[in-house]
Length: 327
Image (tube, rainbow, N blue to C red; front, side):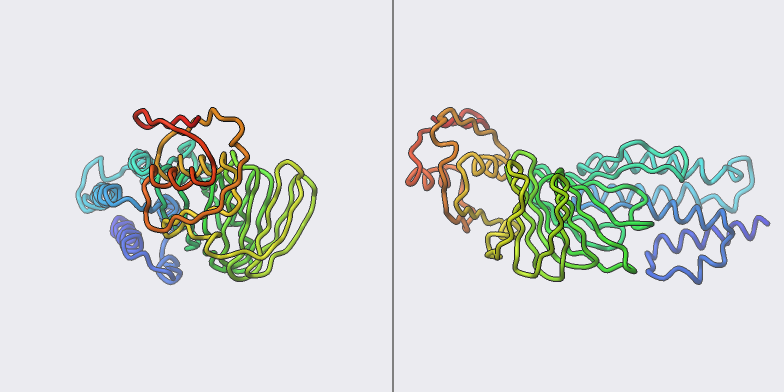
């Protein structure tokens, strides 16, 4: 019996280390409780994009391996520990690690059947997130994406606050849903961009390839996009307008570009706050709704950008520490 359990734990360790796509043959050799243990372990293997956090994660995984499997051949009371007790102590360690890279787990589960939320936040830089179904999300600065731990079981749904570029993998007909405060975007497998910052007056969905369906939560309206089209939801009127877009303006942010086309000065200031991790206070009420069109392609500094905007919009400003006041 002990030899069989040791073999089962060896199989679990190998599958977790190898990250195999097709584990059906090996998993079929495990007992039901050990298959459940593997599935839970696999579900808490979360990736992040920060090198230091990645290094620490590897250390945690190495210690985890030694803790679970290093003493499996030794006798004594410690060898009879419930693997689920070990599992949840590991989950607590991983939760501490994830807080380093702005990834937070709300409610550590007490039972594997319970559902909790996983949140990826990218406060000051562009970062990539790989979802459990291998779909790739690129988050713009100041953006957050949230999904539940049962993602990809019955449905694939993420909640977005901010802006993100989605490369969605098809998954046996399971619809992929991006939910914002006013609009839901539904797809099977496609590439698209969604800009849904809560402080902006619009939510824009731009389709790169494939097809998407937009559900207007407020007006109970449904519309479909073709590649090259964008849908702009107006939070004030609750209507959706569909137009063809310039890809440079839709996804230029992914290469560090700042592109504005007839953007209100207030919206531009919010973009600059995220880009340069600063606060901008506009005391001149007359320029809030002034429109500006321009491209910044060469990593211009904030003073350089403001000086160019001043050519079209008259204002003065002063800088104190990381705060800019515009008059």
